[in-house]
Every structure is written in structure tokens, then in C-alpha cells.
Length: 294
Length: 167
Image (cartoon, rainbow over the protein chains, first blue to last red):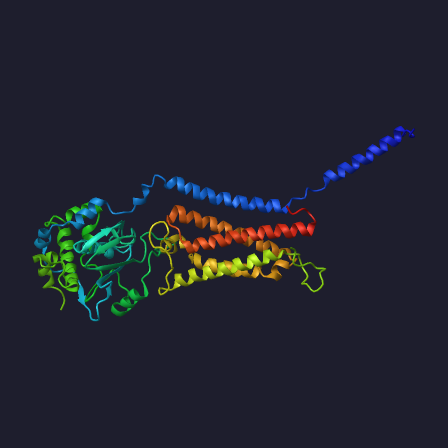
């Protein structure tokens, strides 16, 4: 039979056990580094998955994609101006500023190149896009034309206009290249860069206008720098109002925009060899052609 | 496999680092450096263009020319290049084996900073620019993979050093 412990011995043993337990529980809990690592990785993946999931949920209705596009009615008005309206305006004195340039006209896919360089903040580009879109619509079809306005803190602020940033142009006669260099809302005091000219486009700029004027519109043997008319006549108007006014030959907008469009059309007809005939041989275009720089 | 320990004869002294950790981080850093250099070159030149779709959801040009392509006025492409250059220094075998806590914390902080920036850039692409840049996405994937390698590597080394179970 085992020798029974005295009460004092039992108390001492229990005290020792208690101290051992206490000292063990007071030790700092050692974190498992692998669990921390896995937790961090899982957390990161969850955040990224949440972002992608939110985007998928947001884009499922997908109507917001059209934001920023020019109203269909405006594109329709600009691209369906009757030939008789162009003819009524004909050649307009006091607008333009086109110059004749030398060199072999640039071609792309066998078609003459029209190169537009501008920027969304620029009011002169804003004004010039109206006749340019109008004239080019006689040779082909635009899609995805944007709607924008010139900068709010520049001269002729908020001039309503198109944007070529995401626009596409299909034509059997011409190849259009467009570069919108900057946006119209300053970020940290600077207009954000939007698109950059290619090396070939830069070479054209350097050759014909090293100063880098915008708008810069290259049309083979003709070059248009700056606006053809005063952007002031578009002040305070919406795109719809401009598109409507330009079809009324009694308005300043019609004289300026369609007069310039006739001049651009005449310059483009010189590149396409007079094609299409139903555009290039109209009285308005032939009248404007007579005023092209020699 | 543990590649080195202070007591192994003929091996560099320092922390025991799994060979795959050093190898994986080196490969990822090289991929990241090459991609970031490509993005930087295309940012500053007009003769080299990103080989990438230019329309629809995948539109590198739209992303790289957006206002979000700059942070504090510095092109994100340049920030990415600097990020991987520093990462290259922090991912050398010597840096991995270094017992200096400063090196270890710097690498961890760099990895965490990298993925935080990636999360912001993914957000910007999805919700502000509304386009995805494939070359930028490769940088994002590499940065996330590097984060995984760094935190798992550190956890393994820590586990071995302290004798704690690594799993």
C-alpha cells in the first residue's frame, strides 16, 4: 500500500502544478507565420474578386456604354445635309485659311490620307470639327463620334463639338486618321494626354508646321491650320442647336460651317480625283474649288 | 528544400531560404522588369506601340493614355519600372539570406505596397477607364505572384528559424 501524502505535501504539489500552468498560459501565443501569409493572400484575392464581381454586376445592364457619344440626331443632321443646302451656301469669302503644300500626298491602303490633329480642350478644334465631320460625311460614314466641348477656362469656353477620340470612319475614297492629343478637363493643372501621334504623323507635323498648331488638318496637297471661322458663333449653343442651325442657310452657323465644309470637300475631291462624282461635281463644291489656294 | 544555413559548410551564411523562393522571385522580377520597361518605352516614344487590341474592353492605348496612367504627375509605367528595379535588389539571394530585419521588412513592405497599388490600378481600369490593358495586367499578375512568393517564403523561413510548424 502506498504511503499516503500528508496534507502539506498535497498542497505543495498542487501549488507547483498551478504555477506551471500559470507560467505556461502567460507565455505569449506564438503566431503561425504560414497562417498569416495565407490569410494575407486570401484577403488580397477576395478584394480583387470583389472588384471584378462588382464590375460584372455593374456592367450587366450595359446601357451606360453609350455615354459620351454624340446624339444620334446630331450625327444624322450633320451627315445628311441636302446637296441643295451646300449649294446655296457655296463658296464663302472671309472663312478658311487653307494653304497648298508640296510633297507626295500620303496614302493608306491606296486611299488618300486625311489627318486631323487636335485636342478636346481647344476651342478652335471644336469649331473646325463641325465642318470637317460634315464634309467627311459626304465621303463616308462615322461611327462612335463623341460629344464634348472645349475647356471651360479657355477662350470661347464650352464650345460644343464632336470628339474623334473613339470615332471610327469608313470610306471607300479616304482614309481618316485622327489624334485628340488632350482632354478638356485639367488634372493637376494639366490637360490629360489622350492620344499620341505616330512617327509618320509627327513627321508630317514637323514638315508642315513645326510650331505644332492645332487644329492641324492635312489633306494631301492642302493644309488647314487653326479654325476656319470664329468659334464665338457657337457660344452658348448645344450640339442639337448647332446641328439644327447649320441646316438653315439664313444662319451664321450655316454660312460658316457649310462654307468651310464646301471648301474642305473641294480639297478632298482634289485628292480623290473628283470622286464621288455626285459630291465633287455639285455647284457648291465646284464654287469652293475655284477659291482653293493655287 | 532549405538551401542554406549558417552551419552548412561551403554555403553562404545567413537565413535558410528555400531554393524555390529565390528562383521564383528572380524569374518574376525579370518578367516584371521586362514588361515595365516595354510599357515605359512605349510611353515615351511614338515609334514603338503596344502590341495590343485597340478597341472594346481590351484597349491598352486607352488605359496608357488615360489620366489614371499618371500618379502625382509621374507615369505609372515609370513607377512600375522603379518598383521592379527596387524589387530586383530586394530579391537577390544575398538579400533573401540577409538576417537584417530591415531588408526583410523592406521586402515585405514593398510587396504589400505593390499589391495595394495593383488593387487601385485594377479599380481604375474597371471603373474609371472602362478598359483593360493586357500588358498592365501582366504586371499586376507578376506583382501579386511576387507578393505570394514573398509572404509564403518569409513564413517558411520564419517557421524553420523558430522551429514552429510551417503549415
